[in-house]
Image (cartoon, rainbow, N blue to C red; front, side, top):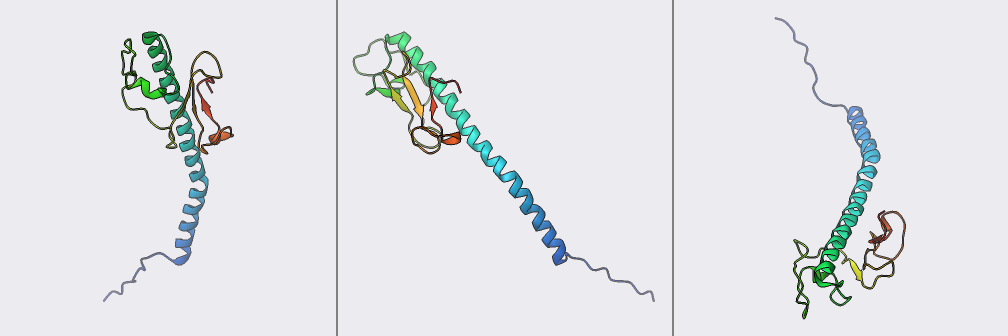
Length: 143
């Protein structure tokens, strides 16, 4: 009879620790980069939304001869204000969204930065000013 040598199957504790360490190192290096991409994507989406508002506001002014008042705000792009016969909207295909951080965009007319209205998102922190992802995203600056 031949004797067969049994091969041991399985993973040793050291092998398991090496694998867990590699996964932890990978997560420590990759996770911050992925999270910063998410913040960058929110900033880009906010800038694009403000640009869409400004385009719609320009069309609104062409039709009505004026920009919406502070009281009418961005909602005038979706709902006809009372007493405004030249309104040819809605000027946006969907309801007025909040910014990517869940807060309403701020609208001010007359604006403080030119003849057009000011549209602002206060970034991730929801406070005026700030740096990085907390910086305000505004209609009067392209970047």
